Length: 64
Image (cartoon, rainbow, N blue to C red; front, side, top):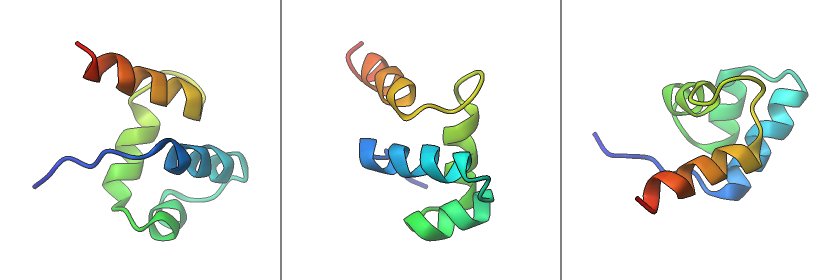
């Protein structure tokens, strides 16, 4: 099992589709990722999913 790192563009799509009330399955199929990957991405931050916050969080973790 590998690690999936989403691009900022992927995160923008996730944010947009979540705003449109799309399902996790729809988002996963649309982006070509597993439902688990999308679920983990959406739920790793507290509150409403925001692409910019998710990207900043990743960059912070990678720079340590």
